[in-house]
Image (cartoon, rainbow, N blue to C red; front, side, top):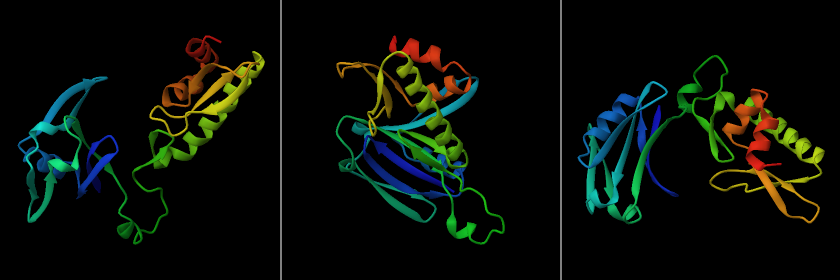
Length: 196
């Protein structure tokens, strides 16, 4: 199952749950002011959907089959784009009838990043290992370390703090740093990122 959302910063409108992505696309393409943007990333074709605030009527009935829902201009901030996204989620009612235990479909938020549930435990363990390696790197160069920026848009970072208590640089605990850690390039990455 897939949950469809219209989002503008922290204003999120949960539209509904769909059996498959084809139904979502069919639904979206019937809304006259939804814009589709096609792109190619790493050789893969990707489509993005959005709505310009100025194009939303005061009130609009969105329909699929025999069900209607409402989109209202007042649900969003003026002069901003509304991003449309969907995410696969677990149907726990159906899952209760299954014989095998498995991880749910979907993702879990780890700091500022969505991680597939099936990969979350490994991701969190690797993230914590990397955090300790960054701390060791700073300590070897005469710096203390401090966790900072938790809950920010860019996510948590580990800062290098000098003997005067001033921040001299930091490394985000993000997927880019994780990739460098897994590839064995963390020290080079820290040096390039922080200058330390």
